[in-house]
Amino acid sequence: MESVVSSGRLRALVAAGMALTSELSLDALLQRLLEVAADLTGARYAALGVVAASGLRLEQFHTFGIDAAARAAIGAPPEGRGILGVLLHQPHPLRLGDLTADPRSVGVPPDHPPMRTFLGVPILLRGATFGNIYLTEKAGGSEFTAEDEELVTLFAAQAAVAIENARLYDAATRWSERVESLNEIGVALAAETDLETLLDLVVRRLRQLLDARFVTIVLPSGEDELRFAAGAGDGGSELVGQTMRRADSKSGRVLDSRQSERVDSVVDDPDVNYGVTRRLATRTGLWVPLIAGDRTIGVLAAHDKLGAPDARFTDDDLRLAEVFAGRAAVAVDLSERVARDTLRRVVAAQETERHRLARELHDETGQSLTSILLGLRSLEDTLTSGESRAAVASLRALTVETLRDVRRLAVELRPKALDDFGLVPALERLTELWASSTGIAVDFQASLGGADALPDETGTALYRIVQESLTNILKHAQAAHVSVVLTRKSGAVVTVIEDDGRGFDPRAASDGFGIEGMRERVALLGGRLQIESGGSTGTAIVVEVPA
Ligand SMILES: Nc1ncnc2c1ncn2[C@@H]1O[C@H](COP(=O)(O)OP(=O)(O)OP(=O)(O)O)[C@@H](O)[C@H]1O
Ligand SMILES: [Mg+2]
Image (cartoon, rainbow, N blue to C red; front, side, top):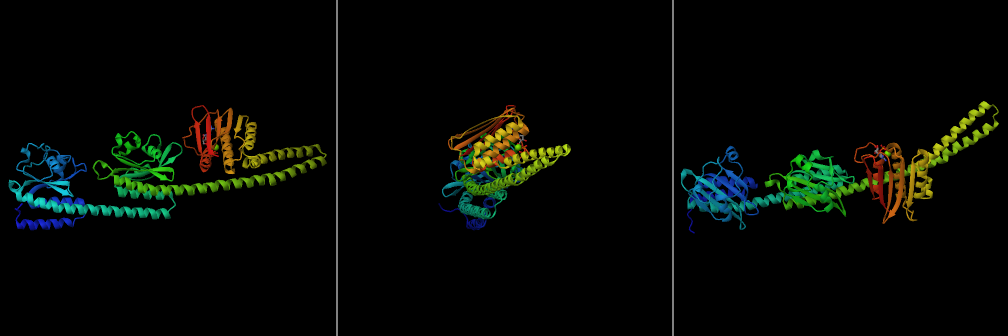
């Protein structure tokens, strides 16, 4: 085709094209592009519709020549029906003298400025339509010319190159930002041992990179709750410390399935926690499990991509979140190991100290009291006055009582039976003593099948758990009957301590350390502790530890 463009306009076009290539931000570039296109053709209004990946509708609409007030009056941007739709389906230039008179027109919204003359040109990027330039209302009321059409077509080709560059630049910047963040987290991971600080860093960085409204991390808390351990962004930080039920949350499902999930509309997803979603008015979400070895230790979630149509995340976003989740998982796992290790040492030190105290009470205090007792007896024999003898006798009675207390204390601190005979005889003695001193009947049964050779740590833990349970029953339960049953099932020892007292709500907060301590001991052994209580049916504590 012979060019109809005058050399003056061609020069202007070349200059405009060069100006475009200096714009590296895509949004600024598109805006500049419209300005130039309007200028080149004398159009009063210019617009650019960016075609969605499906190719069937417009996902962005940039305008030039329409001020903010007019744009607000027009309402929602067009999606690509009518004349705009023609260009979507047939990516060729389209020139019309009166766009409203065209049979394919669907009309314009009521507050739309009048537009008649029209020139539409597609911008093709590697063979696919990136978007369309629409120009309307050529100055002076005349129609757009063939020259205008050719000029804009040439310009669209230049624009395509600039758009491609800006996109690449955008992607490159985004990736270098991502790599930088990952490095930063890697470094922090190596240096920082405080879990809270680390998780905080993970959610803050990920939020920035994804451009999400907020990002959170939940970790399991007890058997059936999840606790927000970190949060960043609008709404996310307020969630920290709050809990939700594992059963009715998306995080709970992701924790079980170990599969990431991307949800484009949370209101339509039955698994998402309704309370949290509604309170924070979330629209979309990404959920990624934190996996360390064969354990799933938490869930990372991001919500509402800012600036994206429909707030949706992309597959790239999901992959990035997965990389971050991997880092976070390592951090959580490490800090849990450190905490477990510390706890194990504390528990071991406690037992050693109790051992020492028990021995001291038994050997030293007990022996001294026994010698005093013997002394008092000889003294009593030498005295003749009935009054003095009575005084010594009452002293002796007091000493006997003290000696009994000291022995009981020593046994409580560390029963010798546990060291000498093992768990079952020690528990037998404990329950007998407890029953006779409290008057509450205890039924004790143990069938560990002759394999009473539990590791020391396990034996001590189970002994302490039964001990604390009995103390709780005396203090809180008002029970008439208690049963303690130990059984062995494949690979585990199950201990059940049951009372018929008034029960309690195990989920309610408590200032006590007893149950917390039991949980810690069981966790150290890699076991499970369950409390079944409530109403007035009493309480059952079920402990299962590997053995
Ligand atoms: N067998 C039980 N029957 C009824 N309530 C119980 C029973 N065991 C525990 N509780 C309730 O659970 C709470 C927490 O128990 P926990 O052993 O942790 O603390 P505590 O006994 O109050 O204090 P601590 O054990 O630190 O001396 C108790 O305060 C009590 O209300
Ligand atoms: Mg207690």
